[in-house]
Image (tube, rainbow, N blue to C red; front, side, top):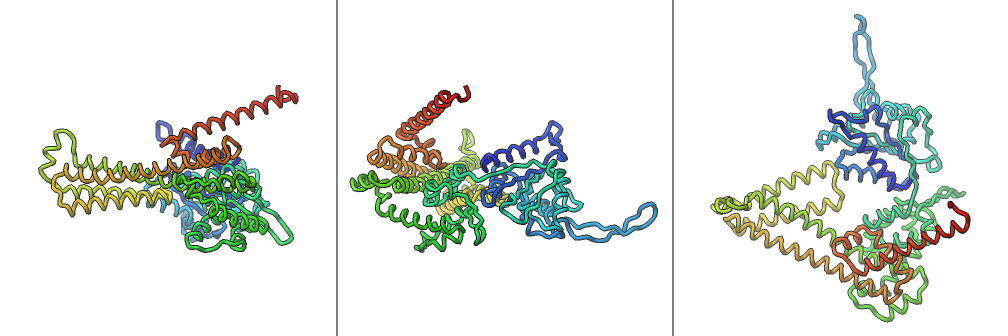
Length: 516
């Protein structure tokens, strides 16, 4: 299965394992909660989906790459203890607590989360001395003589033997005690993630043309040549930073991430053309409504690869505007929630208004809101329940609240109703700014449709454009939020076209003596 389907299955399993009956007992007893084992090629996102699941389900996460551990760190150090059996004293070997088990308890203490995921990566690549401990771990959920705490689900991951010479095959006894999930690379699924995560559009549009290069591993006389999803994502981040710094990406730099000379060279050539098209077609001007006849005429006569690249440039520019609008919308929405808390703390409701107008420090009440919000943010950071973007948004909300408090204190507004009126006025400016971002993105989207209609009309290129918009998380969010008549028009046409293709395929099967 692909990584998206695997994520869904892991989440379903975890929810089932943590489900309790009316007596507060786990409906599936811990002894029957099989460890989940993900087997798939390296670099396809196995670790990332575990981070996402923990974040989305508000669970703790302790993650280890087991190949970095020795037998001692995994199961603990031996020590001698004196015990009495049948009236006689004996020296007995015991073990200190495993570093891994101790980390689970540390996580519980730091975050207050009693349930979580213990994720062990590269579990089938351990050393010979550690292999028995790993089998015991999967079969008995213990490291040494310490059990994994109840409420903590074991998820392990490993690579198939063709990708790693160190792989050890599990025996039937072990396999019969785990839930094995085999994962494979899938570009269409990765592309959804790529749009949401801000993967550079040059990478997305290139792989759309060369899907066979998304994940490729070859064994040659010179050794392993490979391109992986992880490599493309890391390269994407480097490209973005290099662009900001004015530095050049060449084939040698690309090969440091995409360790397959033919693919690295091909992408380097594509990237050079990508930058050329961005300059020649002036995408920024197109999205501002300044569409030249020369650009329209050139794209009509261009090769299909060039057309797709230019469409990719349009989509990349739109993506930035949609993401900016989304980010500011999330910021304003979060700030609005804190405004409601502040109003409640001021008790500006009904008969209480007159009493509250008599005095009180409105700035200090807002300071209390800030302290509470900061504490919640700190707890979420400790639990690692925020994405990087979410953390930035929450931090910006906190800074805004602190700014409001400073302004109120500086103005010396005494009455709470007057203080809230000032804060409401400042918040109103934020909502107008949010509207401006949405309107700017709306104009850009309609200008993009103007260009697409003039250049291609209702054609295959328009199908590509609509399909990619449907794949982009932020584009879908924007259309749901703001609407777009032309998007709905072409999207409906696309869906009808796809359905029509399905009907024709069914008819072809009937004529060929297919399933009927």
